[in-house]
Length: 421
Image 1: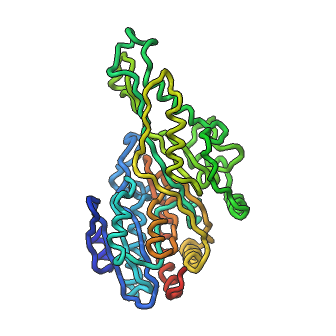
Image 2: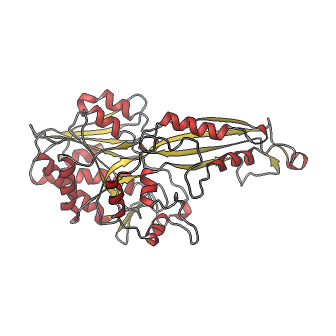
Image 3: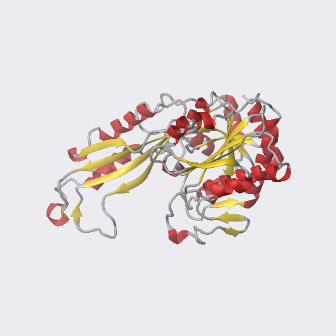
């Protein structure tokens, strides 16, 4: 990444670290006195390969097929790294200078929660201080329709462990007498089943911020083609969306909390034998929304999962990784207006402001660290990108449009002088 930064024309390129972190690639260009400083973020780390047999091409070799670039990390988030560097290079190779100052950080721990990132930002605050934050790690509402994200869900994850005995016991000798830890765990997890909603967790929705009429109108104006949405999500025939009542998919995934069982473990199928299992565990991941508090959500999950356990089995619940708070901003002001115009110029279509069900934990704290700097989250993925899944891909046209948009964004922000907030 550092070599790519140098080729693009960035200066003072360096590998930085914080504590025991993976390396951060850093580069800057500060030759525009009196102009805003733009902080660019992307990440080079990727998710591991899962379901290898479902990949149609080598996940580690970028493959162009039917207008899409396939490969692990193509959309999340190496396409953003190259788009940002391409926009920088376009200015420096043709004009010899940028219309703004630029500082760029490419991280290597985003997919494991960016646990060292806030410490890195604080440690290098003076070097990184900027006026505007630009992150290209979110989704466009549709292929070819640019989107600026103004809200992100947070995340609280817990590890639930159930124990019933010291050792596994022959299922012929003890089956029906010894408490089955795996079954007990599933009974506890079934308490989270919401049917048509809402989630049956006491006080869980007490602090959920309702949508404004403006937000409802904005969501209602978006495409609501259920057939296409089913295709985007990969739903099997006959399987319904798990929505709360009449809530739309967009509202459900952007502004409603969610609970997902992301892992469950008792015994492997390959190594299974006729035993009553003495222990089982699962990871429950909860996406939280404004104005839920992570600590309160953790306690609410813990209470519902430990109360009155089946057969009196021993249940422990503990945090699985640090919680991350939700983020939300008002998508107005000079910097957002510049972003809207830039996306319009790059894509040839008016962008739309959207929410995201995902989590980018550093955005809020970094904006605060930079004195309330506006954060612009520009879409690079689309509903067909399959980030984190087999056959991850990036639409080649949208990738090129993002490069153009960033090139225009530098110019449009440069015209604001220091009035970007």
